Length: 98
Image (cartoon, rainbow, N blue to C red; front, top):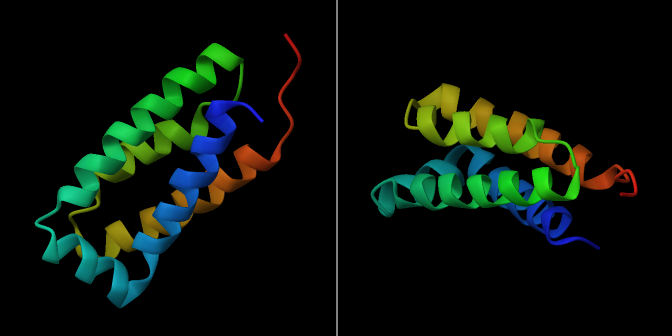
């Protein structure tokens, strides 16, 4: 399994965790929005590795957008859930062989 695929599963799982209505908001607020910055960095790393491997970039790009606007309460929760789904679908797809 490629590193980008592993990172898509990891970031997808973390996005799903942050998308849980009360728990995700509590995590983000109690850590002063630091998880959003960490997720931004992880999504950028995943994007770079996915492009190097020839994989799909849509989940990582959506994750970057989510990390930037997730401080808005309801919008953030919805974006985390959508991003988690897209990342996990991307990770489940097989990549084309180079």
